[in-house]
Length: 277
Image 1: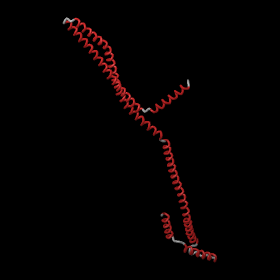
Image 2 (image 1 turned 90 degrees about the vertical axis):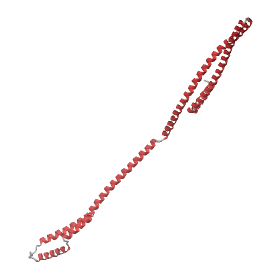
Image 3 (image 1 turned 180 degrees about the vertical axis):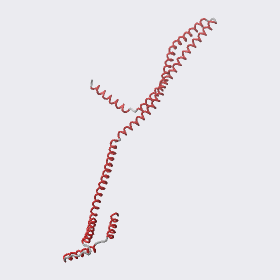
Image 4 (image 1 turned 90 degrees about the horizontal axis):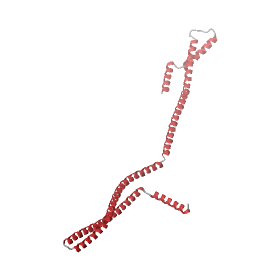
Protein backbone atom coordinates (compact mmCIF):
# COMPACT_ATOMS: atom_id res chain seq x y z
CA UNK A 1 0.00 0.00 0.00
CA UNK A 2 1.36 3.36 -1.02
CA UNK A 3 1.93 6.31 1.26
CA UNK A 4 -0.71 8.43 -0.43
CA UNK A 5 -3.29 5.67 -0.10
CA UNK A 6 -2.60 5.38 3.61
CA UNK A 7 -2.83 9.16 4.06
CA UNK A 8 -6.08 9.23 2.09
CA UNK A 9 -7.55 6.46 4.25
CA UNK A 10 -6.51 8.21 7.48
CA UNK A 11 -8.03 11.49 6.29
CA UNK A 12 -11.26 9.82 5.22
CA UNK A 13 -11.55 7.91 8.51
CA UNK A 14 -11.01 11.08 10.53
CA UNK A 15 -13.51 12.99 8.43
CA UNK A 16 -16.08 10.20 8.80
CA UNK A 17 -15.52 10.17 12.55
CA UNK A 18 -16.00 13.93 12.76
CA UNK A 19 -19.14 13.73 10.64
CA UNK A 20 -20.54 10.91 12.77
CA UNK A 21 -19.91 12.87 15.95
CA UNK A 22 -21.42 16.01 14.44
CA UNK A 23 -24.61 14.24 13.38
CA UNK A 24 -27.62 15.16 15.45
CA UNK A 25 -30.47 12.65 14.94
CA UNK A 26 -33.17 15.28 15.23
CA UNK A 27 -31.45 17.65 12.84
CA UNK A 28 -30.68 14.83 10.43
CA UNK A 29 -34.33 13.75 10.40
CA UNK A 30 -35.43 17.32 9.80
CA UNK A 31 -32.91 17.69 6.99
CA UNK A 32 -34.05 14.38 5.47
CA UNK A 33 -37.64 15.61 5.45
CA UNK A 34 -36.51 18.87 3.89
CA UNK A 35 -34.66 16.98 1.16
CA UNK A 36 -37.65 14.73 0.52
CA UNK A 37 -39.95 17.73 0.26
CA UNK A 38 -37.56 19.32 -2.23
CA UNK A 39 -37.56 16.09 -4.24
CA UNK A 40 -41.34 16.10 -4.07
CA UNK A 41 -41.46 19.63 -5.46
CA UNK A 42 -39.09 18.72 -8.28
CA UNK A 43 -41.04 15.54 -9.02
CA UNK A 44 -44.29 17.47 -9.15
CA UNK A 45 -42.72 19.89 -11.57
CA UNK A 46 -41.48 16.99 -13.71
CA UNK A 47 -44.92 15.38 -13.67
CA UNK A 48 -46.51 18.66 -14.63
CA UNK A 49 -44.09 19.07 -17.53
CA UNK A 50 -44.62 15.47 -18.67
CA UNK A 51 -48.38 15.88 -18.55
CA UNK A 52 -48.15 19.10 -20.53
CA UNK A 53 -45.91 17.45 -23.15
CA UNK A 54 -48.19 14.44 -23.38
CA UNK A 55 -51.19 16.71 -23.81
CA UNK A 56 -49.48 18.67 -26.59
CA UNK A 57 -48.50 15.50 -28.42
CA UNK A 58 -51.98 14.06 -27.96
CA UNK A 59 -53.52 17.27 -29.28
CA UNK A 60 -51.24 17.16 -32.31
CA UNK A 61 -52.13 13.54 -32.84
CA UNK A 62 -55.83 14.27 -32.57
CA UNK A 63 -55.47 17.30 -34.83
CA UNK A 64 -53.78 15.20 -37.50
CA UNK A 65 -56.48 12.58 -37.21
CA UNK A 66 -59.13 15.25 -37.52
CA UNK A 67 -57.27 16.69 -40.51
CA UNK A 68 -57.16 13.26 -42.14
CA UNK A 69 -60.88 12.78 -41.55
CA UNK A 70 -61.61 16.21 -42.95
CA UNK A 71 -59.70 15.54 -46.19
CA UNK A 72 -61.37 12.16 -46.40
CA UNK A 73 -64.75 13.84 -46.40
CA UNK A 74 -63.58 16.44 -48.92
CA UNK A 75 -62.29 13.74 -51.26
CA UNK A 76 -65.65 12.03 -51.12
CA UNK A 77 -67.40 15.34 -51.82
CA UNK A 78 -65.15 16.15 -54.80
CA UNK A 79 -65.59 12.65 -56.18
CA UNK A 80 -69.35 12.90 -55.83
CA UNK A 81 -69.25 16.14 -57.80
CA UNK A 82 -67.28 14.50 -60.52
CA UNK A 83 -64.04 16.33 -59.73
CA UNK A 84 -61.67 13.44 -59.64
CA UNK A 85 -58.49 15.57 -59.62
CA UNK A 86 -59.73 17.54 -56.65
CA UNK A 87 -60.64 14.31 -54.93
CA UNK A 88 -57.13 12.98 -55.59
CA UNK A 89 -55.56 16.09 -53.99
CA UNK A 90 -57.83 15.75 -51.02
CA UNK A 91 -56.77 12.15 -50.58
CA UNK A 92 -53.12 13.19 -50.74
CA UNK A 93 -53.74 15.70 -47.94
CA UNK A 94 -55.57 13.03 -46.00
CA UNK A 95 -52.64 10.67 -46.39
CA UNK A 96 -50.17 13.29 -45.13
CA UNK A 97 -52.31 13.98 -42.04
CA UNK A 98 -52.78 10.27 -41.40
CA UNK A 99 -49.01 9.67 -41.70
CA UNK A 100 -48.33 12.52 -39.22
CA UNK A 101 -50.87 11.09 -36.84
CA UNK A 102 -49.30 7.68 -37.19
CA UNK A 103 -45.90 9.10 -36.35
CA UNK A 104 -47.26 10.94 -33.31
CA UNK A 105 -49.07 7.85 -31.96
CA UNK A 106 -45.95 6.10 -30.45
CA UNK A 107 -44.76 9.37 -28.92
CA UNK A 108 -48.14 9.96 -27.34
CA UNK A 109 -48.23 6.43 -25.94
CA UNK A 110 -44.70 6.74 -24.56
CA UNK A 111 -45.42 10.08 -22.97
CA UNK A 112 -48.58 8.64 -21.43
CA UNK A 113 -46.53 5.81 -19.88
CA UNK A 114 -44.01 8.32 -18.53
CA UNK A 115 -46.76 10.42 -17.03
CA UNK A 116 -48.31 7.35 -15.38
CA UNK A 117 -44.91 6.34 -13.97
CA UNK A 118 -44.21 9.83 -12.68
CA UNK A 119 -47.64 9.99 -11.09
CA UNK A 120 -47.03 6.69 -9.29
CA UNK A 121 -43.63 7.93 -8.16
CA UNK A 122 -45.20 11.14 -6.93
CA UNK A 123 -47.82 9.24 -4.95
CA UNK A 124 -45.14 6.94 -3.49
CA UNK A 125 -42.95 9.89 -2.51
CA UNK A 126 -45.88 11.63 -0.85
CA UNK A 127 -46.63 8.44 1.10
CA UNK A 128 -42.97 8.14 2.13
CA UNK A 129 -42.92 11.75 3.27
CA UNK A 130 -46.05 11.23 5.34
CA UNK A 131 -44.55 8.07 6.84
CA UNK A 132 -41.27 9.88 7.44
CA UNK A 133 -43.07 12.66 9.31
CA UNK A 134 -44.74 10.10 11.56
CA UNK A 135 -41.44 8.31 12.13
CA UNK A 136 -39.73 11.62 12.81
CA UNK A 137 -42.20 12.43 15.56
CA UNK A 138 -41.79 8.96 17.06
CA UNK A 139 -38.01 9.09 16.79
CA UNK A 140 -37.96 12.59 18.26
CA UNK A 141 -39.95 11.36 21.25
CA UNK A 142 -37.69 8.34 21.65
CA UNK A 143 -34.61 10.52 21.28
CA UNK A 144 -35.82 12.94 23.96
CA UNK A 145 -36.56 10.02 26.28
CA UNK A 146 -33.12 8.55 25.54
CA UNK A 147 -31.43 11.88 26.24
CA UNK A 148 -33.34 12.27 29.50
CA UNK A 149 -32.39 8.73 30.50
CA UNK A 150 -28.77 9.36 29.54
CA UNK A 151 -28.66 12.56 31.59
CA UNK A 152 -30.26 10.74 34.51
CA UNK A 153 -27.73 7.93 34.29
CA UNK A 154 -24.88 10.44 34.11
CA UNK A 155 -26.21 12.26 37.16
CA UNK A 156 -26.63 8.97 38.99
CA UNK A 157 -23.10 8.03 37.99
CA UNK A 158 -21.76 11.33 39.28
CA UNK A 159 -23.45 10.81 42.63
CA UNK A 160 -21.12 9.25 45.19
CA UNK A 161 -23.75 7.00 46.76
CA UNK A 162 -21.18 4.63 48.22
CA UNK A 163 -19.42 7.51 49.97
CA UNK A 164 -22.69 8.83 51.34
CA UNK A 165 -23.69 5.40 52.62
CA UNK A 166 -20.26 4.96 54.19
CA UNK A 167 -20.68 8.31 55.92
CA UNK A 168 -24.04 7.21 57.30
CA UNK A 169 -22.51 3.95 58.51
CA UNK A 170 -19.65 5.82 60.20
CA UNK A 171 -22.07 8.17 61.91
CA UNK A 172 -24.15 5.22 63.06
CA UNK A 173 -21.05 3.54 64.51
CA UNK A 174 -20.11 6.76 66.33
CA UNK A 175 -23.58 7.11 67.81
CA UNK A 176 -23.46 3.47 68.92
CA UNK A 177 -20.05 4.02 70.52
CA UNK A 178 -21.31 7.16 72.30
CA UNK A 179 -24.35 5.28 73.62
CA UNK A 180 -22.16 2.40 74.83
CA UNK A 181 -19.69 4.80 76.47
CA UNK A 182 -22.50 6.66 78.24
CA UNK A 183 -24.06 3.43 79.46
CA UNK A 184 -20.70 2.13 80.72
CA UNK A 185 -19.97 5.42 82.48
CA UNK A 186 -23.39 5.32 84.13
CA UNK A 187 -22.81 1.73 85.29
CA UNK A 188 -19.35 2.56 86.64
CA UNK A 189 -20.67 5.65 88.42
CA UNK A 190 -23.48 3.61 89.97
CA UNK A 191 -21.10 0.89 91.19
CA UNK A 192 -18.60 3.45 92.56
CA UNK A 193 -21.29 5.40 94.37
CA UNK A 194 -22.74 2.24 95.88
CA UNK A 195 -19.40 1.10 97.29
CA UNK A 196 -18.61 4.55 98.66
CA UNK A 197 -22.01 4.80 100.28
CA UNK A 198 -21.65 1.35 101.86
CA UNK A 199 -18.22 2.15 103.30
CA UNK A 200 -19.45 5.53 104.53
CA UNK A 201 -22.33 3.82 106.31
CA UNK A 202 -19.96 1.28 107.85
CA UNK A 203 -17.54 3.99 108.99
CA UNK A 204 -20.27 6.19 110.43
CA UNK A 205 -21.96 3.23 112.08
CA UNK A 206 -18.77 1.94 113.76
CA UNK A 207 -18.50 4.95 116.12
CA UNK A 208 -22.13 4.62 117.16
CA UNK A 209 -21.76 0.87 117.65
CA UNK A 210 -18.62 1.35 119.76
CA UNK A 211 -20.31 3.95 121.89
CA UNK A 212 -23.36 1.73 122.22
CA UNK A 213 -21.18 -1.25 123.24
CA UNK A 214 -19.40 0.86 125.87
CA UNK A 215 -22.70 1.98 127.35
CA UNK A 216 -23.89 -1.63 127.45
CA UNK A 217 -20.65 -2.64 129.21
CA UNK A 218 -21.12 0.06 131.89
CA UNK A 219 -24.69 -1.04 132.48
CA UNK A 220 -23.75 -4.72 132.71
CA UNK A 221 -20.79 -3.93 135.06
CA UNK A 222 -22.91 -1.97 137.54
CA UNK A 223 -25.50 -4.72 137.63
CA UNK A 224 -22.87 -7.40 138.43
CA UNK A 225 -21.37 -5.30 141.27
CA UNK A 226 -24.75 -4.84 142.87
CA UNK A 227 -25.45 -8.57 142.72
CA UNK A 228 -22.00 -9.45 144.16
CA UNK A 229 -22.62 -7.30 147.30
CA UNK A 230 -26.05 -8.05 148.78
CA UNK A 231 -27.48 -5.92 151.59
CA UNK A 232 -27.26 -7.18 155.30
CA UNK A 233 -24.02 -9.17 154.71
CA UNK A 234 -21.21 -8.08 156.99
CA UNK A 235 -17.49 -8.75 156.64
CA UNK A 236 -15.42 -10.10 159.46
CA UNK A 237 -12.18 -8.37 158.59
CA UNK A 238 -11.32 -4.74 158.14
CA UNK A 239 -9.94 -5.46 154.70
CA UNK A 240 -13.30 -6.68 153.57
CA UNK A 241 -14.93 -3.58 155.02
CA UNK A 242 -12.40 -1.42 153.24
CA UNK A 243 -13.03 -3.26 149.92
CA UNK A 244 -16.72 -3.05 150.45
CA UNK A 245 -16.52 0.66 151.12
CA UNK A 246 -14.42 1.16 148.00
CA UNK A 247 -16.90 -0.86 145.98
CA UNK A 248 -19.75 1.15 147.33
CA UNK A 249 -18.02 4.37 146.43
CA UNK A 250 -17.41 3.09 142.88
CA UNK A 251 -21.01 1.93 142.56
CA UNK A 252 -22.23 5.28 143.75
CA UNK A 253 -20.03 7.02 141.24
CA UNK A 254 -21.22 4.68 138.43
CA UNK A 255 -24.81 5.18 139.46
CA UNK A 256 -24.32 8.91 139.25
CA UNK A 257 -22.71 8.60 135.79
CA UNK A 258 -25.13 5.98 134.50
CA UNK A 259 -28.17 6.90 132.43
CA UNK A 260 -31.60 5.49 133.14
CA UNK A 261 -33.14 2.99 130.71
CA UNK A 262 -35.91 5.36 129.68
CA UNK A 263 -33.48 8.10 128.82
CA UNK A 264 -31.30 5.69 126.82
CA UNK A 265 -34.33 4.40 124.93
CA UNK A 266 -35.28 7.96 124.10
CA UNK A 267 -31.79 8.75 122.82
CA UNK A 268 -31.69 5.55 120.77
CA UNK A 269 -35.08 6.33 119.22
CA UNK A 270 -33.95 9.85 118.32
CA UNK A 271 -30.78 8.40 116.81
CA UNK A 272 -32.78 5.93 114.69
CA UNK A 273 -34.95 8.77 113.33
CA UNK A 274 -31.87 10.77 112.38
CA UNK A 275 -30.35 7.77 110.60
CA UNK A 276 -33.65 7.04 108.78
CA UNK A 277 -33.94 10.64 107.61
